[in-house]
Length: 209
View: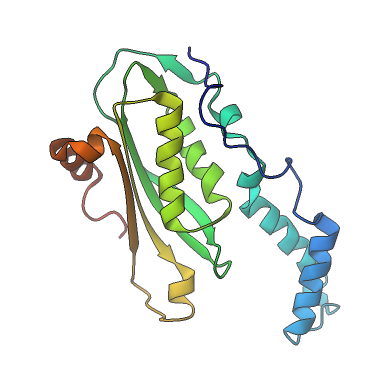
């Protein structure tokens, strides 16, 4: 087992369970927003809405309070395996930082070990740590790749994310079938076309139906 304390630190932005202004203040802001939108926050259907929204936002941005070192610790192991490790079709939901509307899709993550492997369940957990924040897809992709690279010092890391963005579907250009694709290729995935192509072939060309 390998300690990951030496990896580049990604510290939590807030303590577990905290919201930026405290739950009660967040509820008050939601109640005020409802009024500004022309609604009556006191009517029956909306009385509990500020509380529900506050709790939902607390969950959807829970990644701010997670420490990536604690997520990975005790699950990095010495191993001589040198072939590609791939976890694909990892569902995720995130929130666009520009409009605070959801974007969602699948992440496909591979790495080539160089003396260390990580427990497979930790890879989707890494996705959730960074997805449950206000995000842009480009940064989300890079953060996942860099975290694995820092933790394992592998021969290479490849990450592909395809997602649908509600800010493009519900408003703005209103394109219902558009899919955004981002990738991050490090090490052999960047330098070796055959390795990169093997990864892309394994995840398939039609990632989101």
